[in-house]
Length: 85
Image (tube, rainbow, N blue to C red):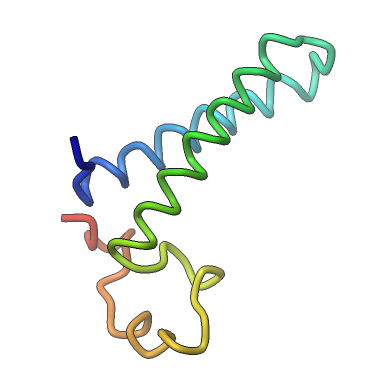
């Protein structure tokens, strides 16, 4: 089943949230191997989702823009402005 633009954006946000939560936990529990594995799992999920989103719908932020498509980036709407709908 192919991911829609909205589903990919949701997956990116959810996995990013989980990563942030796990980073905060790992700051005080650096030896928790299960938490580290979970962090790496979410990191991989997010990486794949960002790659798929970017290849289908364009960059998520200005760090993913190259010189060849910079003009299209400035035309918006940007993903956080409802561009995922």
